[in-house]
Image 1 (spheres, rainbow, N blue to C red):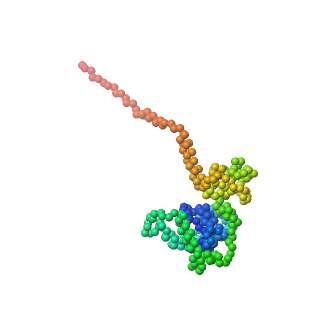
Image 2: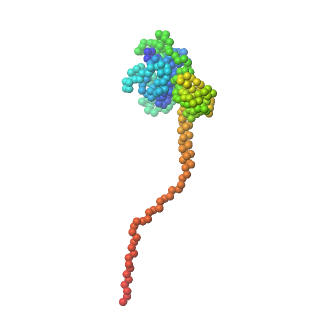
Image 3: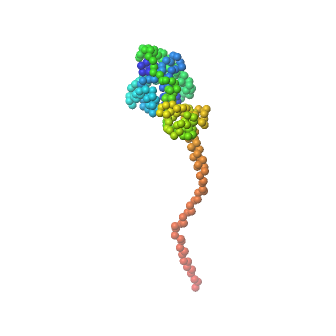
Amino acid sequence: MDDYSRAICGYMVFAGAPSAMNTALALRQAIWRKSEPSWAMCGIPDVLHVDHGSDFTSHHLEYTAVALKIRLIFSTVGRPQGRGKIERFFRTLNTEVLPTLPGHLAADVPKPRPSIDLPALDQAIGEFIAQYNERTHREIGVSPKAAWVADGWLPRMPESLDQLDGLLLTVPTHRVVQRDGIHFQGQRYLSPTLASFVGRTITVRYDPRDLSEIRVYDHDTFICTAIDEAHPNQRLTLREIETARRARRRQLRKDINDRIPTTPRHEPEPPPSSAAPRRRRLRTYEEDD
């Protein structure tokens, strides 16, 4: 949400816990130009108010903020200054949109059946945001869209969508270029350009949603795109690769355990009895006269 106009600039609907990647996707939509002509909001913000969630305190977001010249302002724990406007919008969303959707949890329906999927929920929220930006806001007296375009100002934009994606949707890490390419996440990435960088440490930027290729940088200068030779045309996510790696580890442990020879157990012989042997008594006989 834009602080001045109250315009909703971008959003992201997802299931599960918040993550740095989902935050980056929402920020990407907020910054870049929309396909809908009526959704005019775009541009790099000068200031971004955030809380202390793990998705906002990640190194990824901090690095991106520095690269895009965004000043991050973290709210004081327990005192959400700067976030009251977006919190009020969330309340509006909860009261005006969610109760109208199938499967909504209500007091008279304690256990509703799931009736809507994420794409349908995303569409419903997107349609509401379009209406919200066009209707008069009671605090500013005009619609958020009218307040956004009122001064005719030009938003600060990134050089290209590729540059924005490179900063927002990829995670940086460092690797040493080997003679057979770059080894990363158990995969091998190749490019003819890497031949002159063998033995040098470079920066790799990767998209966790697609590890079929990685971008290689030398001191923030783009070198090339390296391709996963084993899956050149296959889109693999970081989660899929990590899941497959864990499965291989489990199978390897099972194979090792199956190969360990087992010997039958020998029960220990019982110790000799410690009871004293019975002493034989002398028998006496009476003779006849």
